[in-house]
Amino acid sequence: MRFAFLVAWREYEENARTKGFWLGILLVPVIIFFSVQVPIWLETKGTPTRQYVLVDQSGTLATVVESRLEMSHQRQVLSALNEYARRQADGHGAAPPLLEEFINQGGQSNFLAQLQPHLKPGAPPFKSPRRAFQRAPEPSDLSKLSDLAALAQGLKPYLRGEKQIEVDGQSVSLAAAILIPRDIEQQVVRPKGKSPGGTGIEYWSGNLADTKLRDEVEQTVNTEIRRREYLLRGMDAAAIREVEQTYAPFASLNPKKQPGQEAVNTTDIIKQWAPSAFVYLLWVAVFAIVQMLLNNIIEEKSNRIIEVLLSSVTPGELMTGKLFGIAAVGLTMVGSWILALVGILFWKASGVAGTSAVTGQMLTVLYSSSLIPMFVVYFLLGYVMYAACILALGSVCNTLKEAQSYMGVITMVMMVPLMTMTFIPKDPNGVLARVLSWIPLYTPFIMMNRAMADPPLIDLVGTLVLLVVSAVGALWMAGKVFRIGILRTGQPPKLLEMLRWLKR
Image (cartoon, rainbow, N blue to C red; front, side):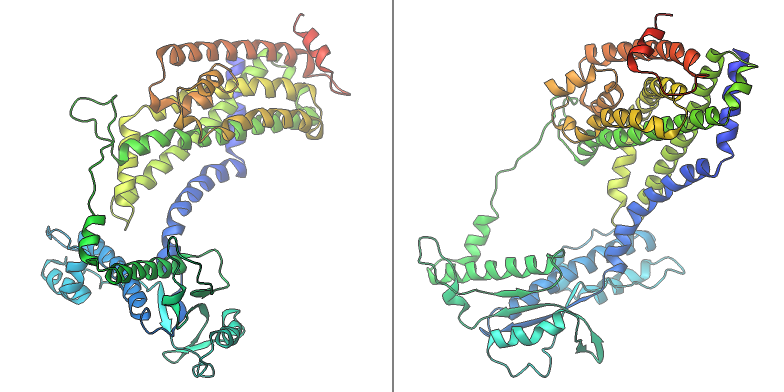
């Protein structure tokens, strides 16, 4: 066993000195950080204000649309002000105002005036969020056009970026054009009514991916059209709005929770889906580490280093050393990833705008659950299971090209947990989940995905015992193949020949 430990230490030391090892440790935390931070940065700073032209020939809807877009912007301002007060105000415990109250009381200027006495010394000035959308004047060469078709034709060069419009003395790109015809009231579609024809409101934009402005305008216009319809039919629009806001309370309750605490909250939902993230991390970790093990064996065999090593240790000691040495490398990498994930979540929970609540709940899930211990157990057993296959495969192949065909089959087998990753949490104790749990190659991934669903004890204990027995059996068979195939040269043996080796 001493020689196996020396081989393991050699494997760990050699891999720890490589650039790939340190890139693997540093790159994943960087990816995690930027995957969280970049969308926030793009939403707040990276997305420019989109200019739009609004032509309302009916003269009745433009004010409503602009009012709705202004309300959306003020909602962003209020959210940013509340976060600014939370981080920069000392002892400011006043409840944040509602949006309508915020606007009626003077908006940002009034809020900052009330907050000023409570600001910490050296607090930076508040930066108001950038407007998502801003109305631009019609281009001067098109402002006199009364025909919407001609106006749309004239706006196309601006919408394609061939021309720019002037806004506050600056040339900017036009993102969208909203054209409301004069007879829009006659084009309204009513139930049981005859189709009035016409194209209705035209929304022109070359950006088909961002539909936020279109959705805002469509919802605003339809809400206003319905309000007018209520008035035409002699209905009280305010009373109808109150009726529409009337509802029966609906509570989601979990029978598995303690009496008095059955209400389902955001933490419970995160807890239900958190295992899927760990399944993906488990899959990446196992796949990356066994690939590292395969490359290691093939490289040393092709360079004849294996022959030198076997002059000092037995094939069994060499295989065991490689197995545990690469496992230690994998644990180091995965451990650094988990620590980085916890650190990033802790940093986010400590006060980054818009993320503190959710990240705090994610940290609560990690602290109060057994996800991390289960991840370590299933990583080790899953690694041993697949590493046994890789050890046998690597011992009979002389080049990576020869090993690729076998590795392709293993990759296809490993794809099943990924394809069922989002389905299992929806039915964690269903037939598919329970059947896959008892297939040793899938047990680590599926049981990890079922971790927070309280699987039956027979599944939890039985699959774990089966996985341990299967891992030991796989290592025993891999040892048989490794002992014979490690010094073999020439063409890789056929499957039947490898099966005969198991009888020796």
